[in-house]
Every structure is written in structure tokens, then in C-alpha cells.
Length: 60
Image (cartoon, rainbow, N blue to C red; front, side):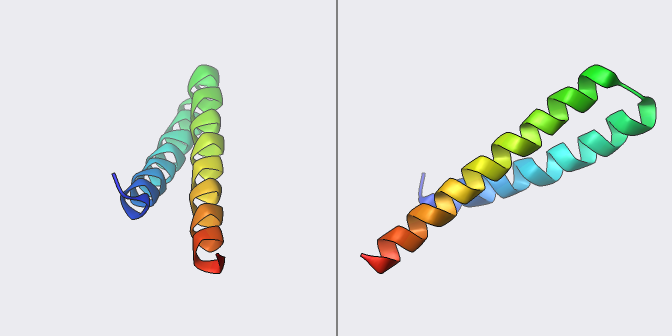
């Protein structure tokens, strides 16, 4: 899987987790809220890592 494909995957995961968080909040699902907040956190970390890696490769 290329870095571009990985980035798209994590961006999609971020979008899905955001939608799922909204649903969990509407349903007052505490477990769902915590899980989706973690999914969002992890997706953002992965996106930042891939973006930093790409910047590093272009700068080298």
C-alpha cells in the first residue's frame, strides 16, 4: 500500500469515526462515544505521521 493510499484510508476512517461519534452522542452511548473519540484520535495521529513522512521525503 502506497503512502497516498494509506493517507486516503485514514482520512476515510476519520470521516467515518466522526459520523459514528455524532450518532453515539445523539443516542447518549457512552461506550460508543469513547470508542469513536479514540478512533478519531488514532486517525489524526496516523494522518499527521504520514503527512510528516511525506514532507521529510520531499525535503531530503
